[in-house]
Length: 336
Image 1 (cartoon, rainbow, N blue to C red):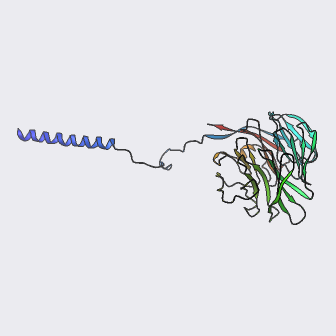
Image 2 (image 1 turned 90 degrees about the vertical axis):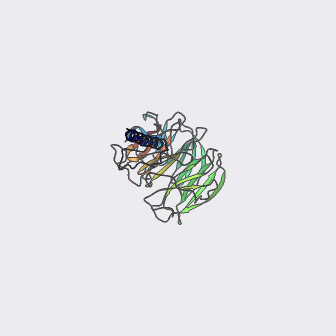
Image 3 (image 1 turned 90 degrees about the horizontal axis):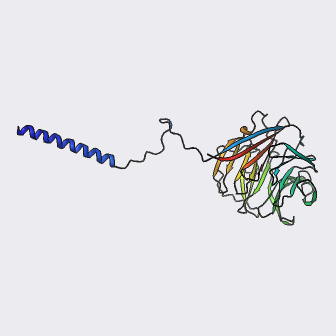
């Protein structure tokens, strides 16, 4: 009898020890497991907080463009879109992309609006910037440069103008010119020298922190098929130690930039639309074919352009396609 009692007591002690050991193990903190292996689980990364939504697409065939393609486009305070054809017409479209009117202006290639809602028209050949009202009334010449091609220009938040232009008589040197809001010269300096005929400046933006950003191909920065974003200070000095902007794919040329009022930067390249915050964080990206649905693919030599509606987060994308038609997309940055 005593032996049986001792056996039961021993069994109870063993069972109690096993339970206490299991409880201790259950209360021990879990060891970090790291990122789940997607090959072995159904785990997927959490979705990005933002995405680019395509609101609408249109194809216009009623406006003929010069062989120079399309330069920059602009939107006024009401959200009307202004597109120059480089010959003699500026097409004005309402936010729903219906035609509002046409302005007859000399070689309207690159367009922008000032804070005072004056329309600045850049002429590509015999590089010129002129001032107009939104209705097309001439207000005066702001700047001109003979024997030169206008590449791109931007208006800084303080009203200064930054202009990239290339001398046509050899050697072909590209210059950066800065004017104040009244058109007075602040500086004119060499920007770079094209090494090949395919080297190109695609666009320039002025950031709220006073820096400049230039999208280009070639100029000893990259090959002619790709595009890079190069940062400069307000005096035009290259900031070469800046890390590159994060991108889902390297940008293919041509690539045009747009700075938004909040400092966000958007670049439309031949393969992707990238949308970065003012601090360089990638908010969202979208394949460029998403705004070409049903349309012929654009030729690499043709240029596209971006403009923002007054809300600062809805954008127009205009792209001249290989059949001569104009593709217009409306996109927006949305939060999931």
